[in-house]
Image (tube, one colour):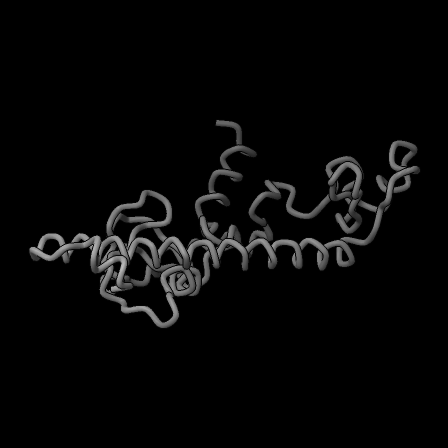
Length: 187
């Protein structure tokens, strides 16, 4: 296997599938997948709802018992060692250096959606483009991601409420009640 591809694969393994950054306080769940503790807590939190319904793995949808969460110390140690190599998820072996100039990547071309060094940003191919410092554009993208995440959280909460309602209707039906009547009554 190509060493660059191998390093990228390792970096991908130590990234949380939910937040896509390095795992923080990695927790293993019943199916064997690992996520940041805070990501799982936020994902499985439903304000004002009973916590008696089923949880599933965000990757494989296997049933999960939250009380079975366990810290994955070995993975946490690997994450820390990869972090010390100054690698970042999605950045590959070169980290945050330009492959052509060896300079730090600190500029962003909005037209090409590309991170680059200052030398690349001054090249003729980008002279007519809107090239800004990464810090400036990072806030724009963070805000867009925040808004998208809030929208998805609302949709997820609605889906979970529907799932809880369906589980209640199923339980009522199994108990011999009339789920349509109780569903219409808001039970």
